[in-house]
Image (cartoon, rainbow, N blue to C red):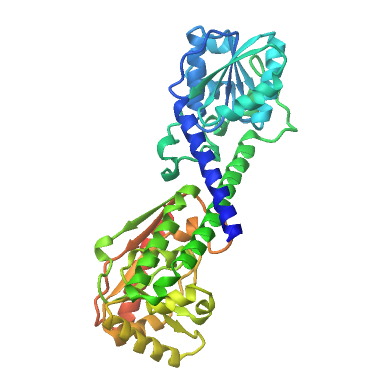
Length: 450
């Protein structure tokens, strides 16, 4: 328990720091106008059009003599940058320099220091996004330490970063790259007046570097989520042990609570979960046939179905606590190699679960399939449909796009679980299988494209 307590303390410290950072970002905009200075530097990155507009606006209003645009994509031309910044051509041609060599914030600082030294400027206004300003000033203060250069900040707001609800906003991942750094053009047109300094072909493309930074952010968020997921699961599993001694409904309540926690933490990864077709979620006995792409498909059914009974392989029943809770909930544990014997067991126990008003969940393909993979629907679902004589509720999803079956990476986006119109009992086997596969695969393919 000491290790669990230590982990909880570290997690609380981490979240406190993150919330403090979000509050600081929120308070930095709208930025007050700075005092006039000699130079203005704008650090490019995601949302560069907003940053550029802010810097050019300061230049046009007389707050600086000259602007350096640091970290420009190697493929961008001066005309590309002018079009995005919407600067007056006369002012742009005379007073805007482009820097192509900075690949990261450290490079921005060094490039800015070289430019300031060449221009013999002693005062500078720094323009960058609100979320980026603390890191930028850390590096700039380091390179200008002891130089006598006076630094001021002017933070540009990031529209996609809603600081008050950043944890619920999948768009709040500003390091994924974008904006002006993605402008393409003829690199041969970069030279001439205003290029600072001449491009260095040996340096990495800033856009590629930012794409790498974006992947790093996704990896860090994913690691945090996975750590919290296992912590949450362990705490619930141990603390909820007494429910095993109570009525079955206590176990269903525990599963609902645990599942909601699993999905509630996903915004850490920039993932939002949507449940569609709620009117088709069965309240009484039914066969539920979800598309199976990842483990989240399992957690989701525990979360939204009222009284779940999974058909699950026997190996899962050996997992401490999970196996105990599954047995208490009435999950049907099967030997996948048992053939007709297993099928008779599922039919017999399935009828018992229906008498209790439970929903029997079975993945019609039997195992996980990657999004877009060729479907392989097993005949077992048809046998259950015929023998149990109840509606079948298909469920489509794109969960595997954002929660791959293997690895720890959780990719930002929207995960959708859509309960589709139930298939009524009594259809012929071939017609039932055709309708089931058609509904699930057609809708899942549409969701995969989101």
